[in-house]
Image 1 (cartoon, rainbow, N blue to C red):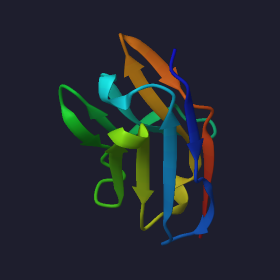
Image 2 (cartoon, rainbow, N blue to C red):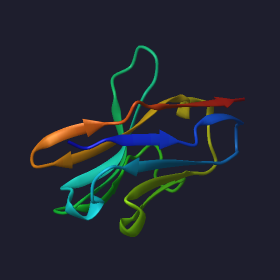
Image 3 (cartoon, helix red, strand yellow):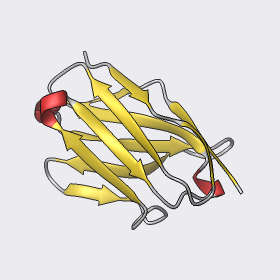
Image 4 (cartoon, one colour):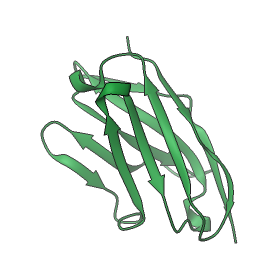
Amino acid sequence: QVQLVESGGGSVQAGGSLRLSCAASGSIFSFDAVGWYRQAPGMPREIVATVTKTTGTNVGDSVKGRFTISVDNAKNSVYLQMNSLKPEDSAVYYCNAVWLGNDYWGQGTHVTVSS
């Protein structure tokens, strides 16, 4: 069983920055994939950025050049640095891990960007 706990969400004005953190209960090094997804009200959940053992780092087109995902194996943590935030980035952000074919999700952290 994997537990994921996100932190770092909040409210920021457009153009600002936030850094999300996700602490995992297991060894991130053993996971098949880790990453961040987001879901805005009334919208489907979408990929923000992922790191997988097979394809490496993948970043969604809507955040490319603004968001950066990083992994700290020693701290079993995944981070999402979000710069140049836009109102359309407002959503609940979820940390995800894939391990032994199973998907695990954090509880989500809210990000609100005001114009």
